[in-house]
Image (cartoon, rainbow, N blue to C red):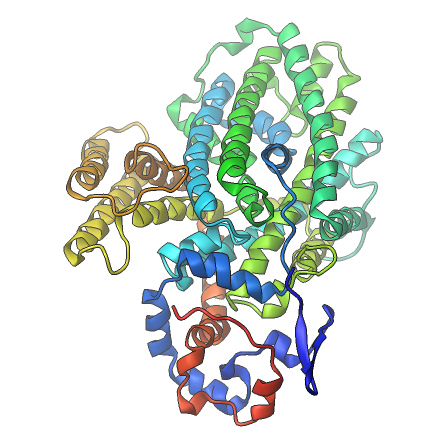
Length: 597
């Protein structure tokens, strides 16, 4: 394990993990004084262009950046752990809540097709994640992969959005935990929350949600291995409850409840698919565990693809069971399975459902905290945020500082914000980053710097634009005229021929070393199309939030992230105007390895 060392006199001394100097937060040349910062701001245009066209590489992400954490994460996970992490990160309260809501409001008994459609889209994204995580087994997940293929700027905007979604999502799950715990105790709604005179939507303080988040974060900070053990236990209990729900529901099923099967038509099925897609969210957390996996090339494909395949089957069975047990028009959107069991005389089962939901939400918080902290760790290694958050504790082998950055904002949001407020913040972030992952995979397969001819790069860009534009056109036409067909005559063939042209006229420049996405470019291209289509099925508020978050991220990038990453990439050839006058600062600073791209 690498030590954290500092210079004292002529001797090298270990440095404390808990340190708070300026060099730990702002070590870059641009932030050493107001003069150097003003000079850096004056070069913003040039630096932005440089970082926009520059790329990282596999060796830098795997070999150099992890050194900036000063200590290694412990390789303690196997494919068995990853499968259970898959269950823990994906199967939460979403399946219990979203199924009833979307069956009643949008899809009817055809809700199972919604889960199939969103499951197929999720599996396509899983394939892309798997190939990247096998070849680039680092904690950064999508941030690292996009940084290699699409550059710092795209990587930061996409990863930043999904981290903000993580803050809000963790807070929402924690608030839901309190609600289900209240139901389990058979007490009135909001009875465990503190009533205040604050603004509506923020007037019910939830200290239990904060406590649950804090406990989950504490466990994640102590040990990844112990978190895995706890996740096993909680996930097994949750799966037993789900198995009971499926079996009991089919025993009391009434096939006549499945008619009519398409009460809201195809539009309703895809509207529901865009919403229930979030029940599959969280599998990307498994990719961030690659740095702690013993044998990434074997364990990650089994863990990711194996867990998501089983989860898709389980979701579809639960989606079939609910409308067979109770007519879709009678389903309670707030407590679908509990009320459905009451309707067939199994009132006691609502407590079992609440227990299963509680266990599911607990594991979602545990695994979510692990995954998001590792995102932050790698972002800090790249100096997008202060490198203090990249430090790994020498004893626990976990990124404690990064975990604190997750739990504190999430706890503040969970304390004040109601579920209605949080529900309104759902965005296109997840679908957007999955779409960008598919784009990055195509770039990885068809373009290698300094090898691919310029004309092939131009063709790749044109074919990608055709695929993306035709997918946007299909989604837009569906939203404007769901019963029409003329638009599809243009957009669908355009997508098909764009993908076909890529397959025929472009030779692949890189072959996967161990495991690769099959049927390239068809499956990644289909992933782009399905993610964009599902994005188009979301409401305008989701896009408004996405736009606001992106603007905030852009402001931060221009004033901080851009200059920090530029300095780290050009440390060896820094212009004299940005040299630090105080040589003692550089002499005392810890020597680091840096990328030149």
